[in-house]
Length: 116
Image (tube, rainbow, N blue to C red; front, side, top):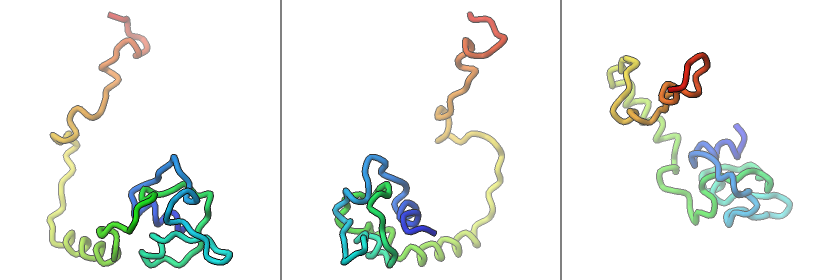
């Protein structure tokens, strides 16, 4: 996995408005570019200034939830083994209700139908 892809995964996405070179955690060490947060997470690879920044842009330290991520994932996998499998019924949950728009809410955009 590319170093920046790992940071996107850890941070939950990109901060598309910024580049890594603009971040306070980006620095130059001799001829190499580095990310302080990536090194704090245990990474050792070089960084590129033109990469799109991750969501940890300008954070002073790596959030506690992402330290030791592999150990946390191992624990989650063990928890899942003990849980019964959920059945997928295809019904909309209460949280999702009203989130998805339907094309049928806008009949004027359906082809072959008269406008009312």
